Length: 165
Image (cartoon, rainbow, N blue to C red; front, side):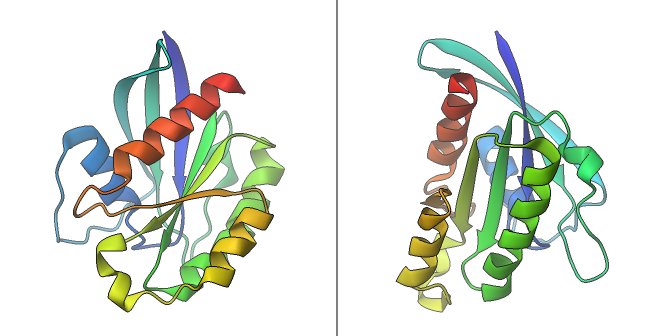
């Protein structure tokens, strides 16, 4: 069995905790609870014939008062960025977070979840935004923690990428 640390990174209220809860426990709550510091969950998955134990570090979201501590990122086997499609600033902040994380952990497998896909009628992201992410070599996938759409696919893609790196 392989063990991989995956850090959930993004601004506050993008759905990092909700995605982890949906993936690990198959549940979703409409109530918003801000993560303080870090919360660690575990899930064992089978990927390409390999058992992978994922340690999911759900980091407190970045806001104007608090940065993501670089020390939490150390030892990461993969980074799982979360962008809220209804809040454009979460995408704009992603680039700064990605630069900081890359400086801290180097080139590790990365996915960007474009979350809250169940609210696409309220999305502020455009085709150019997706292209810009792709141009930076960032793999993206639409997700909804509420409906579960894309959630398992995103985590399993990242797990597979970590065992190949």
